[in-house]
Amino acid sequence: MTRYIRRAAGLCLVLLAALFVNAVRVQVLQAHDFNNSPANRRPEIARYADPRGHIVVSGKPVTGSKDTGQQLRYERTYRDGPLYAPVTGYSSQLYGTTLLENAEDAVLSGTHPMLAPLPFWSEFTGSLPPGGRVVTTIDASLQRTAYAGLAGRRGAVAAIEPSTGKILALVSSPSYDPGLLSGNDPSVTAAWKRLGGAASRPMLNRAIRQTYPPGSAFKIVTAAAALEARVVTDPDARTDTPDPYVLPGTRTRLPNPVKGCKNASLVYAVRFSCNTVMANLGVKVGRARMVETAERFGFNDDALRIPAWVAPSNFDRRMSVDQLALSSIGQFDTAATPLQMAMVAAAVANGGELAYPYLVDRTTTWDGDLVRQTSGRSYRRAVNPATALDLRRMMIAAVEKGTGRRAAIKGVVVGGKTGTAQHGVGNTGTPYAWFIAWAQARDAGRAEVAVAVVVEDAEANRAEISGGGDAAPIARAVMVAALRD
Image 1 (cartoon, one colour):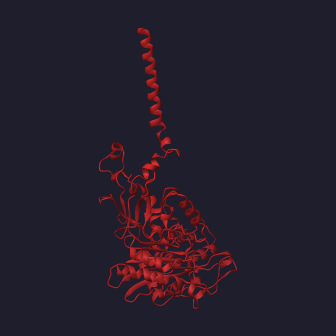
Image 2 (cartoon, rainbow, N blue to C red):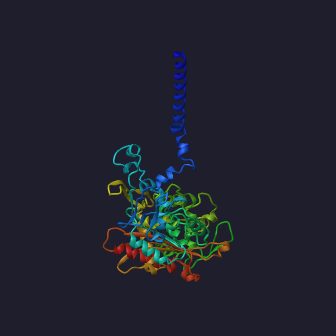
């Protein structure tokens, strides 16, 4: 009998060992695969079991959560969804997250380790702490002003505080309501198909994810390169520039939008946007120095995060001389996001020092304890202070006496640059209207705001297409709002 008991006991030990090995296999070795299996609903159920944390603008939440009573209990809600969609993005039970909802998901969902009151809190309790708060740098007044200025037209606005890099406004138009995508019922799928298939592309964040030919707004970068390379030593001196200017190695004549550009000074060329002068200077600076200067302003940087990903703006590193001439006036393959062009204006306004742009001021626990604070930091020195001073003077002249008059604000120092970006086959498409600018109160020690505006649906009147007609009034309104705050 004892022998049979020993055999039974041995068999039981073998079975227990097998169970132990299988448990280790399932719970340790294959835990990740099972946890991430599409058939496993537990992580998804847990994710939506509690309200999501808030995204905050000017001290007020612009997001919330709705208790649906369903298995995926809480859905995301948005206040003024279309206004803030380029900032918040969406949090969808079907389609995931974008923009701040994605970049700060750990804080908003409660999974960030700094939200727990004690280390390993979630492992011990089996529950997550409440979602934290993401406090943005956006100024509600500037955001509303920019959105109203675009008035549904295709385009975008980006505004920055030059000295710190804080993003004060980030608007894309037309926009959409991210709340339409929050749940998981058939209406969400229908909204996704409708928005994704719309010709106006409302889900495209034009402020940071769309690049446009910057046209004459890019001439500020070319002017900076000419000054830094000492191709121009006196901005008021006449340049050796023929009119018409024939692109090197071709028979193509480059036209000017105004008269008086033959041998015009750099100051005159910026004020009245002479194509010939700026193309000629770009060629004299040379490709290497033009690329170097553009990259100091932020072009060709595919690692820029605010913390959401920003599409890199392009200035070709390889091109022929005639292509360099066109690139120097913001044509050929030169392309920039509105945020990038706001960075150009901000660097000029800030004495040549370009601050790293950022959208999140701080993150906190649900009851306000600090998790992370963003401190302003330098991105790059775009130009030396003397060059920045010359550029400031040129941009001020463009507003006071040139193409940017519609951006002038009484009693305020305003510098700006218009731009008209040709596009389409044979440049037959309606040009994009650009305006970049900065504003500084006369008694202030530094500029309060730098802004870039692009309008895709510009008027067909060539005299008004330049940013002075379509984009400058929007920039002016944003600057007035910034100065008023």
